[in-house]
Length: 136
Image (cartoon, rainbow, N blue to C red; front, side):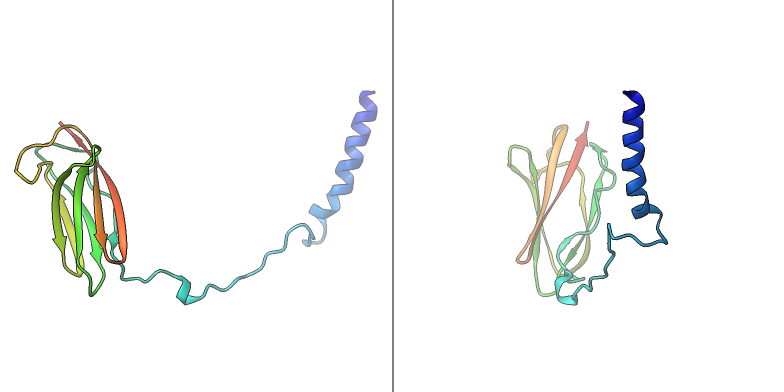
């Protein structure tokens, strides 16, 4: 019985072999090239965070910073929230490249507790979010 199974397996394998060993040709897959229209690509100068927070996580008393880019003709607001959705701090940015620097304090100057915070960048054309981790 084992010999019969081995023989059948060899026949099945041998019948598939030409699809893989032929002269470099196979009818299994065909590679095609599809052009991408320029209009489908996102604009290069758009409003968004351009990098992750560095350092992240960061310690209370130190700072973390995030690079962001605001599209020409727009104003963006970056707000930091705790996981309960409470606003911790907010700042507006004009068009151009900027650095958002956060020292772990709220808008009243009080130190925030250890936890996860969300920095949300909002403009007329974009909403982007980055996670920040503060450790005491």
